[in-house]
Image (cartoon, rainbow, N blue to C red; front, side):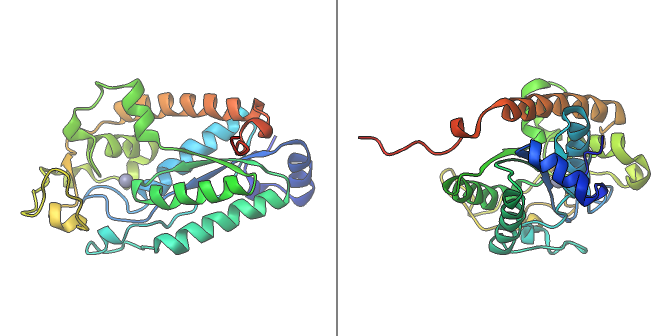
Length: 253
Ligand SMILES: [Zn+2]
């Protein structure tokens, strides 16, 4: 059975959408990930996680949205950044197109933390319209199930955790000879309770937040296996949950 929407023909899509009200949508970004990782890190990782989850659950998976909210990486060459509003509207219209064919539950597999505020606002707006969107982020699942696999300094942007997952998925596009370790700088205006509109370049010259040289494909495989099995559980749960139990509650009297 095909699970990738773009590989189906229209009769197969009709067959799926008349029997199922759930779909998986991976979204990521195209931004610098230190000297060793490909720019596509965030979307390539979620593409792999989402496709494997689709195979294991039989839930249709859409093509990955490769560009996201990453203007904070723009000083590093090759970052293609989209405004939060444009990103939000684009993803929202994908969800609305799915709803035209009867999809009411959408699992977004998000590969880039910077996309989250826009996705959350969109998910609330879609719940208003009777469409339930959940958002899965693999690094949160990895921290929950494998809390000691990486030290805190190995979990930052482009650090060992993310690099390890890249090594497990596509070794040939990671250049470990260039991997570096860099402790993020503290901005003079940084303080408890203060949020600043800083860019990655304000914190790090290499684009790596923390330690990346300790990455390994073995660790990456462990992460992928655990996060996919966690996502499979979530997708199966949503699949069996009636939409009536996910939509907004009525007014309280
Ligand atoms: Zn990333």
